[in-house]
Image (cartoon, rainbow over all chains, first blue to last red):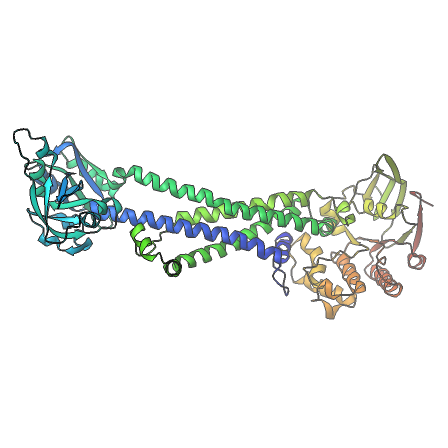
Length: 408
Length: 218
């Protein structure tokens, strides 16, 4: 082992002596910064991952859309389902409705589902809280949880539905709404869908919007293990002109960009915690260099080169970084593992458990940490700790042995 | 080319103290042959330590030349193997025990192996610290620390030992024991010794005695 590595280790972790306060403070500060980054990015990644999963669960990984309506959707669904990597395809119709229950109006999004194929793409059944998806027919609807709460319409109640098509008719004096029965309440856990959506059969949606046999699009679920970016071109190859397939990533590009931006900003802001730890390490190493001035002179007198003396002090920054980062990763991962217990304890104390679940739509705090995130955190912490050792190392290397030995 | 272990010609050194120029050394000539023991005496401020620093290559003279066995290379790498230095203040590394402090001299040249470890233990035994090799400097007395420093100076089998007032921080009895040890080990290992001291008795134990006065040898 080169002497500078040996001495750096001994100065940080001397044998048979108490763990030096200087080392403990430096290591802990780096560890806390790294642990904080891991916890925050893990939870943020968890939110993003959970939301992505919910979106894919409710709309499939691929959407097929046309500039206008898609007319021959039966043949499109058939062709698409024959494409390798596709598990299923289902047509849908969507639009805005006006819904009224006991003079309470609402303007939800309508989602018309093809009951024969929807379960091959979207597992809506598992999100039904009250009632059943099987009870849905051309004269009934399922309400999203938020809409159900807002209207106060119980299971079995009758709603009145108006469409823009009805309101645009000028040949009638009295607009007659379509009456439908509420047969279920559905909650997918996505705020946008849960706040105000009416689920109905595709035929009812086509009827309400005067689509006859046309649809607005087709949702596609890919087979397990298939890559959506590879499947999209294959689907496009079998689609007629004017109809195109988009991956989920393309459709939610803006949302994903915002999520990534938020995550990057959080990482940028929290990296300042590690930067502060690096400054602390640097100031403590500077004190160490001052304290060890005569020893630095001795090393020079014993024949150590300036470069080796610089490496000795720079290595102390690296070692603090390595130990601190390692400890930080362990502490961060442990905190993430026990995150729900910690949140439960915290919300129990503050009494905000239900509010938290309602606000975030998750009963448990999600967590998802990509290996890339850990790699970025570890590399950033190690680079900053190494840089923290550079200035003290340069000062140590500049000391002339004869002057260092004379210092008081 | 000179065959002397160390040869200095016309070494001069001036320090600035505010606006004042202090001529510490004014053209010192010194030649020490292999196996010789030389003492340099002089009152405080006579330039003894400055001369020793120049001889060790730790500082550069304003004028004059210095050669080690005829070579002007007095750089850090050569110093590691050619010289052993004993200081007044011991300068042991507090985090290392006595054995590791002695081994440090060998570590700076290369990673120490079994022969170096054996030599370090042997040297500690020769300075009477075999039982205390795993004691930290804070657990040793002043005399014991200086013994460790002597063993460290001999670790790389140097051609020359430079000792700068090695008894300055020790009581008379311990100081004498250290000088006896230093001179004895130098003779035993045929290592040249240059000893800076202001103690007449200690100086007398060397084969040649020099006295520095006002920056020159008398």
